[in-house]
Image (cartoon, rainbow, N blue to C red; front, side, top):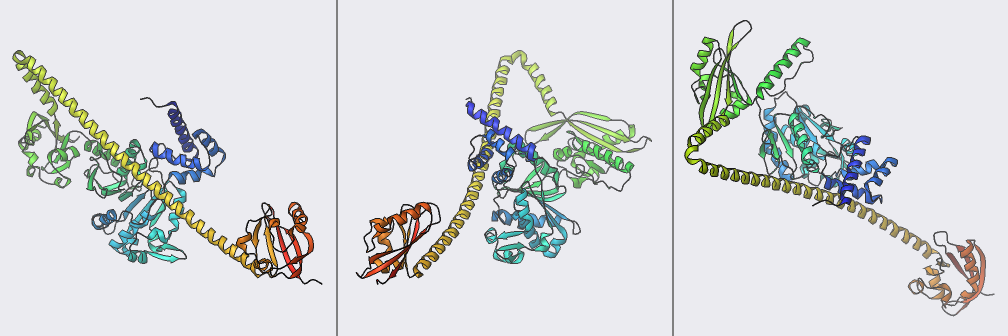
Length: 616
């Protein structure tokens, strides 16, 4: 189905707007999911009453103050201390003790909170490590980096000041131990605060923080598309030390990334960097070393990394038969580990299975040449077979010294299997050609159906993950909107209280005036009738409110005042007092002195002050 032209045009305008934001302000949102991103931008456009992306871009060009408002709308900063208590409990009871035991007592523990928003997550990490190590030891060994692209949120994080509502998920003893009251806010304790460093960092573009033992990035990946998530995970893999942990949000997963990460706890979204052996880890160069030493180290590192990344299994032995090197493929293929380096080769199963190699190694040393063993068979599992070409090479230095041997296992399973299949087909071709054709066709059909089923399952899994992330995003947006409504409700309550207080004040003033005071609006209808007026004429406020003043019959000949009142209302000038013969509520005659003053305010109106005088 072809998308409507309007949707295509809107999509193009959205991409143009995102490119403009990236080029003008350095915020790259092009990796964000388009559905949630468009929804957040449209929310801001509705606020400023703009309908189209193109018009909104023009608005941004002429109104620089709009950028912070837009970024605050896109970057939903919904967070709290120890959010998702079960996940934090697992981190505190399982991951933190393991990490502390792994890092040396004199080494620094490095933690990175990516997408930290206003800092609650970074300070939560400081709390759980302080609980494990003690505050004094934690201030000496633990360093936490909190990063985000939102400068406004980072400014809030750097202060370490939070309202009581932000601390509602914290147990009372932790709140008392790690926060100090400061007016209406609570300040995170200063000694631990100095170990938390906040800075702006874009996880999609900037170089990652290196040598990290624990990386927390919770409810951030879900805003990015699949391609952007893959790039971010690649940066996280580079940032983590071997055996380091990655802590994600409850709606996030590492899909199809079992090569670099193992699942530590899928329920709480904790993943552990898979060990890749000593040869893969980058060497750390001493800046004080000479250029020759650094170049030699660099060349050795390149050789080690090339060997470690080889698709063939490679083992290196010294001249005494001790294992000096095992690359990653060999560890996976033969069940070896870095702990096997340094052991005698003849103690390992691979020395005699799938083929006896000790005699071959001796032959290679004695003849000082490479020896190749083709199509070595090995059983893998109940029925699966593997074939290798095994190459044993003596390692001869430029001086002619034999210092060891290299053993390479080239997996030829597929090639050998194809050779056997071809041979079998050739043998049976004369008698069973038709049957073979049918069988091959059926196998191809089954394989295609299976592949199609696998692709459908993968697509369904991706769609479910995307839907889950969208639901979580919507939940965060609703929570953000709820907080905004609560803030507005509190402001309205305060304003209502202020208005009630003002109304009571003015009613008290009017009630304290002994003379009768009548306030008329611009339509000359009664809006206020004080107690003095009630005492004079016997009419209550509820009886005269919003009544036409000149239609009332209450002992004061109002028609006599019509000209004076209308002139005062129209000109806005105070009129001279007018004395009129009147009758009070008890039927007694009196002279009413009426002063007419204009009401200063929208809509106009007048204020009448009526004072009673006895007739001469």
